Amino acid sequence: MSISLSRLDPNGADRSGLIEFFTSNDFPFHVHAEPWTVAKAVEVIGSGVLRNQENEAFWLRHDTLGVIGYVRLEDLTDDTPMFDLRLGKEFRGRGLGIACLRAVTDHVFTTLNVDRFEGHTRDDNIAMRSTFVRAGWSKEAHYRRAWPVRGQAPRDSVAYAILREEWESGSSVDVHWHDLPMFTPHVEEDVEFTSNSVSEATELVDLYRSVGWTAYTQNPVTLRSSVLSSAHVVSARLNGELIGLARVVSDFASIVYLQDVLVHPNHHRRGVGRQLVTRVLAPFGAVRQKVLLTDTDPGQTAFYDSLGFAEASAAGRSDVRGFVKL
Image 1 (cartoon, helix red, strand yellow):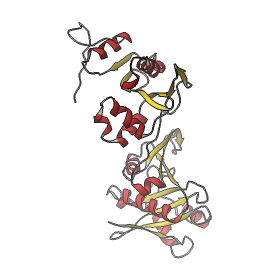
Image 2 (cartoon, rainbow, N blue to C red):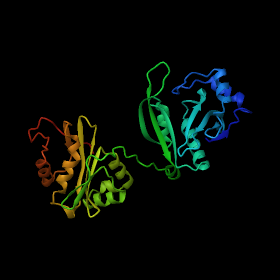
Image 3 (cartoon, rainbow, N blue to C red):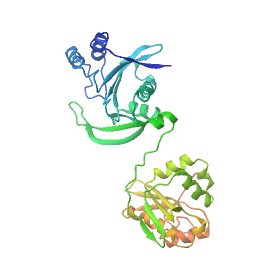
C-alpha cells in the first residue's frame, strides 16, 4: 500500500472535486462535523485559505483506491507547521490513517526546513489518537475544554508532535512529563542532591551495573525511559559523578511506590541512601499508601525499618499482604 500527496489547484482543476468532497462527507470530531453546504464550500475555496503563503492543500491518493482524502498543511511560515487531515467516509476504519499520516510527515520533512511537525485532535477521537501513536508521534500537551463542539460543552484538546530526528531514526524521544524540580539542589557533605534532573542513559547504566542490577542495563533506552516516566526522581552526585538515585511511581493521590533506591558501592554507609529516600518521598507526605518491594537481605530490611516502613507478612502479624508476579 502506498499513499502519495497530490497538490491541489483549489480555484482551477480541483474546484469541483473539492466541493463534492466537502459536501458529501461528514467530519466527526472536527469543529464543524456536518457536511458543508455548497455555499460554505464555495466560500472557503474562494477565500484562498487552501493555497496561500501559510497553507497548502493536497489530495491523499492511494495506489489502488485513488483519492481517499484531503490534507491541508497549515502555518507553513512557522517553525512548527500543523495540518488538517480528512478521509472520505468510505475509507474510514480501514487502517489507512497511519499510512496517510506517515506520507504527510514524509512530505513535510523532505520539503520543509523544520524540525518538528504538530497536530491536534479531540480527546475522544480515539482512532486519531491511536493513529498518532502508531505513526511514531508523541503526546505533548492536553488542553482542558479547548475544543469547541457545536451545541455542546467544549471537549479537551490533545496535541501530538514528531521531531525530525524521530522521523529520521524511527525512534521516539521520550517526553519528560514530571520535570518540575520538587526542591532546589542541596549539598550534604559534598554530595549534591537534585530533583527531577534525569541522567543520560550511559550514566544510569553505569550506576545500575555497579549494584548488580543487570536486568535494567540490558536495554539502556528502556531504562532511561522508565526513569523519565517516574513521578519523582532524586539524583546524588559527588564531584559531578552520579553515585545514587531514587525514583517513585505514583497516582499523586492515594499511593506512591518506591521503585528504585541505589547507591554506588564505593559510597555506602555515608547516609546517601537515607537522604535519597527521604527526599524522593517528601512531596508525597499526604499520600496514604507508601509501598516498596525489596529482596530478603537483612541489611535491606533493617534499612527500611529505620525509615518507618513495616514488612507486610503473616509472620509479622500484619493486617495487609504484599504480592508480586515476576
